[in-house]
Image (cartoon, rainbow, N blue to C red; front, side, top):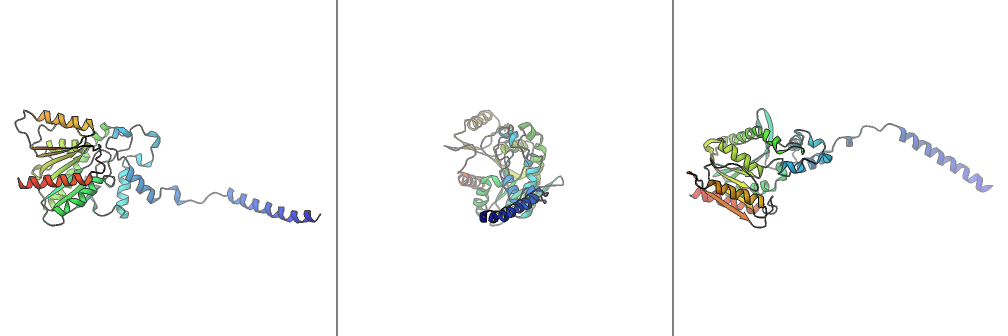
Length: 299
């Protein structure tokens, strides 16, 4: 009997506590900020969005599709990061056809700049995810060389090569806006550096007269394919030796140049063991480019 009188109040308290908990669980949840992506999550997603230079490599990744796969979403996320000041130094916005786009500009440390390098990234690459831009921004300004890297349109991961080709006019307009910025800063000796598919885009644009007389040379890194028979600018080709496709494309360009009346000075450097993205060799490429530009200036 004493044990019974002791348990009854205890059971009653437990029952009351369970009823209170159950009523709170049944209440509708208040709006939570976690329902929208946190700024840090957006930053990480924009930094990782579509960094593969081959758009077709991600075209079947429908299961991973998310908000950043909507048209223009990755670039909007980048611009939001810029507005919050989380992209780091050197980033700014330029404008083309009334629309802002991201760029990274590192002036020469000593004015006037002897030249500027205009960087054209590959398809789907976001600037903060391209380590070569960081290396160029670090290594070229002390050598009186400015660097301006342009964010080209970033399409959804389901985009294919034909979709990027359709957006090429927008990309070219951005390059023209970037060239105008450099010329406004008094720089009329500009070298265009194309990365992977960006090299093909830049080569086609240069053949069509991009930049006029302000562009003095063309450099290319990685795997790209374009008709350069009409391109008379001095050219530097940085080829990853472990990528047979990149080597074959460079060989094809060399064969097509034979027999041409006007053959530009072409310097080709094959990097033994280099992967397609030249991972870990960014500063080596920056030094190669810097030495080539100084040699051109002295010739």
